[in-house]
Image 1: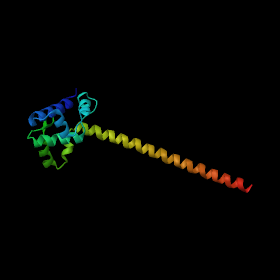
Image 2: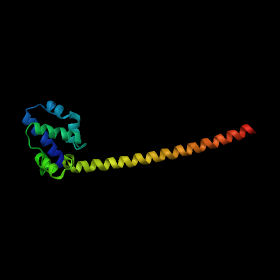
Image 3: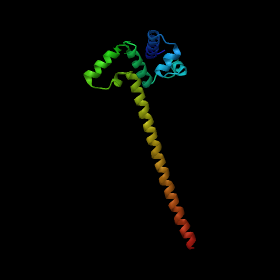
Image 4: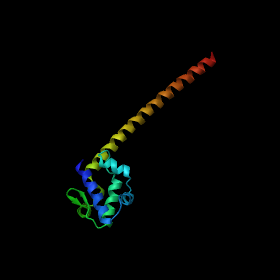
Amino acid sequence: MQEKTKLFLNRVARLQEKKLLTQKELLLSIGLSKGMLSFIRNGKHPPSVKILRRLAQAEIEAGIEAPVTEATTMSEMQEKYVRTGRPMLEFLAPDYLKNEMQRLRTNIKRYQEQIETAKEDIRMDREQLAELSRHAKTSVKA
């Protein structure tokens, strides 16, 4: 199990213990299904930024100093935000965000390539249609 996954699961367990919630109540409060929790536990899917935000908010409400990374707590993250003016999201699971950005860039590039291919197909279809139209006009005249 990856270190970040362990950290996430420890945070979930600590929040559940602090708020005296059942697992179902806790998962509902942070918008996480049992199935997704299982995926995260098994390393099949990282927690989304949305889930991390909800967990952090629940930790703040419960008065828990939430470690965002091994060396960063929520207050340290807030201090960085005040000091640098950069969005707090930048300090939240930076490796995950970096990987997510790379995935999005790859998808954008793939979609751009698909658009270019579609444009080329349309251009070729127009040329063929024009050629058929010219051919039809010459056939009618003959």
